[in-house]
Amino acid sequence: MEQHDHLDELLSCRIASARKKAEPCTIVIFGASGDLTARKLIPALFHLFAEKQLPAPCRIVGFARREKSHESWRNEMFEALKLFSRTKNPEPAIWEEFAKLLFYCRGDFNDVTAYKSLEEMLTSFGDARLKTHLLFYLSTSPSQFAEVVDHLHAANLLHKQSPVDEGWQRIVVEKPFGHDLASALQLNAELTRHAHEKQIFRIDHYLGKETVQNIMVFRFANSIFEQLWNRRYVDNVQITVSEKQGVGTRGGYYEEAGALRDMVQNHLLQVLSLVAMEPPVSLNGEAVRDEKVKLLNSIRELSPTQVATNVVRAQYTQGTVDGKSFPAYRQEPKVKPGSNVETFVAARFFIDNWRWSGVPFYLRTGKALEHSASEVRVQFRPTPPVLFAAQCNNNLDPNSITLRLQPNEGITMRINGKVPGTSLELRPVRMHFSYDTEFGAYTPEAYERLLLEAIEGDSTLFIRRDEVENAWRIVDPIRTAWADEPLSETEFYPAGGWGPIAAEQLLSVRGHAWRNPQKVK
Image (cartoon, rainbow, N blue to C red; front, side, top):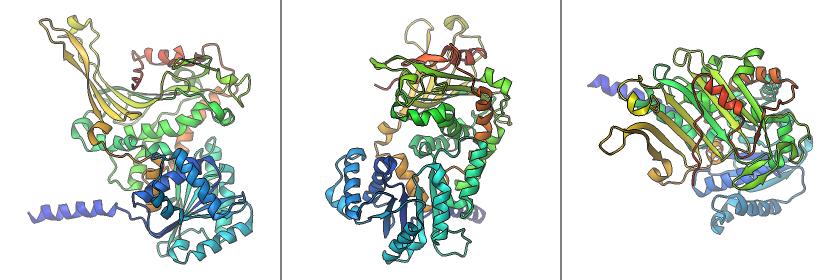
């Protein structure tokens, strides 16, 4: 009995040690005049404040080059809150209290005196913790990351910390984390010049989504599923992130990025790593990220000749989405008339480890598709073609589990059932679980969760340096193989469909077929 008690005590210690507490701090947003601040960051911080999850005391400082007073910036953020907040009508009393936390510091990113003004503002807050506990959110172009970090260090606001240092400083950076492996290595070197890797929080908002996190819970908290999660039972895995929108006003960005860099290198490979990784030794951030890195290291790198048979690219042409006419990508604003940038990518990857050897993982993403959805479908091996073969003409539907990430988050199991009646007729049926129906609770938006975890210093949902570099290792050979080759006639698809025929052929050569996400009514 005493031995069991001792084991329970050890387990409790491990669980308790993973909990972190939000300490009083100042959040400094560089690029405070940008869309991200108005659309995502301030609404997220406001809702954290309303839910009493922000630490006290706390200050939020906007840093940008435009001339503004504290009051004018607060008024701008209030208008943004009314437009972009999930509540639309913020409670006036709560806003008045939240507004007292907002301050504005004018300055160019390359202006040394501006950082001195920032340092003086932090000192003026009175509480010493508001100057020593600092979260710097770099909502800027990646080309400005190094400049901001250098000036923060020179102003004595950022330094590499040892365990005996008082306070903490953390840097949050947005993607893209480079545009290839070489640039990612350079960017990481610049960021770590004045900060340890543990102080850097690379944000991918996709990892803040509730059901992306529930992938781990689904796998490791349910023994009946984890037993099946391997090459013995799984036939193939399909990860789809579809968007019915085109590039719209982001044509200039997309001309530089394309779907491979914009979606596959980060979002899809991150989801893949969570779906396929081994169980971590704990829920500690480093333990989880260790397993993700191991998984990324196990993905088989494609040679230039293998790219042609394992990766499909395409670009949307004019079509109809939801009954509305849609222009071709080449007709979108800021897009070159003869652009060869891909708006659709489908790829087949193999994971060379014991659990997944021989199982194909199909990744697919595209713009101007039939509808928007994100889901993971784990398709199991078919049963032997006996017993029910005559009733099903050898087309017995294989079992599957689908993790719907958005919209209408949930989990669906597809099994075969007997149709009521005197004959032995079989038909696929679904067992569906909806998070909204089951829990009916408020689900925090991705930036709310990610900002809170950055404040608490929990790195679990952020991307580590070696994750970024390994993802580029996987993607770079594909870009190299495409080089400047023009798109062929088969590498176009009309807006409103599910991509080019070549994407279907990518699966059919192995006897597989895409299972398109169902449209949510």
